Image 1 (cartoon, rainbow, N blue to C red):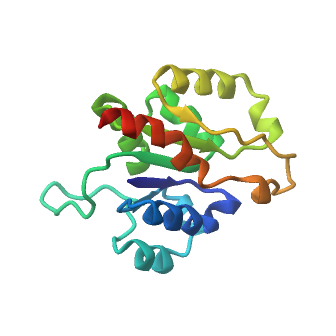
Image 2 (image 1 turned 90 degrees about the vertical axis):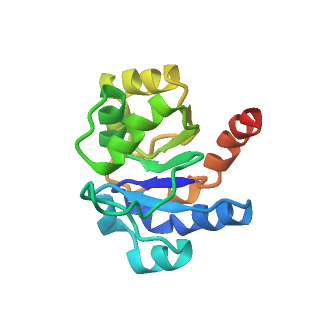
Length: 172
């Protein structure tokens, strides 16, 4: 499983999802957006997963540091990532992987983490709709108040696994 981490204040808690996924039998690799990389404890995450964090493109001759994913979780999925992903913009490794995974049929769950002002923008609802139409599973997090840094205690990291479980069992 790939866990794609975006730049949000709660990203530092990604170890919670990694632990839950590993307890459920997943081999986990982390891909961070370039900005998201600054929000996590990279050495701790790498020690926890046993893999280097991917954040930048590799040269064609470089070995692939992660095995191909059976599933992808995107927590926290930021306003920027959701809108770019839905528009097919692939300007970072994380977005490139997300855009490509659709064509490969990789089960993917996104746990949005946005504030209410961002969620009010019409592009956000359109982007969520497009992602849902693509078969992306969207988490239930309710947007928090702007400038509140809020909702970390309400963010359900494990919801990604709950969303993906039926898709994975259906694949056999």
